[in-house]
Image (cartoon, rainbow, N blue to C red):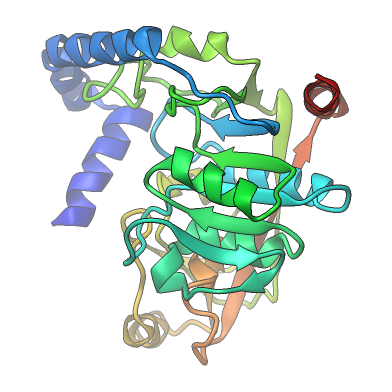
Length: 311
């Protein structure tokens, strides 16, 4: 039932048919009320400043736009020259409050405690620290106490109470531009233009995806937002596709049943899915992703950090 509801709204937001468009139009009064409240919240916010540079990577649309791989690329760029701490909400985790997931590469939590995105960042950024916290201000304070020289906020654009350098990412070809619940945007879309850097995919940044350990018969099993965005990157040999809601997980038993049912040689999954199943004894083909960020964008971030250090 949950997967069916999620799929319905993902289709309404990203692949709308006539019925979706009619429902979207019916919900417009609620969308206008919600987005107006969010705009007032943003305009009235009192922003707290910290004694270190903070780079926020966020978006306005729900669903994937590349935030986490963008954060990973930035953390790996700067962790050689200063102590980097990544602070994020930790969606899908079974813990509450503030939790240190890693400290300069040392893993301190399980994936169940941290959530999949936080664990993926911790494993790929081997010299950075990762902190999850519902209260991002508390997370930043913990990072400072740990000696951080740079904080990167994952999904930080809607944290309007923090002074930071704002990077907003947006996917290409979004056919529905309405705010929630009519469309996929958490605020009015024009708010994106208030960011320090506003990027559309393939214009400022792009994803390079390759398959590691492919087989002749693979089954895609993934629990990410808007999973159909993977279709352009799927390798040959995918015989079936199985989806769950974002941050959910497949059990080992479910995956073994899928392999048998489809007579497949391996399960194809993203790195975000794989961190939840690394200890499972399963044949896995992995979709690995590299984020390519234009040098001009990196230079803007470099300048912000340099100017902050000099102030």
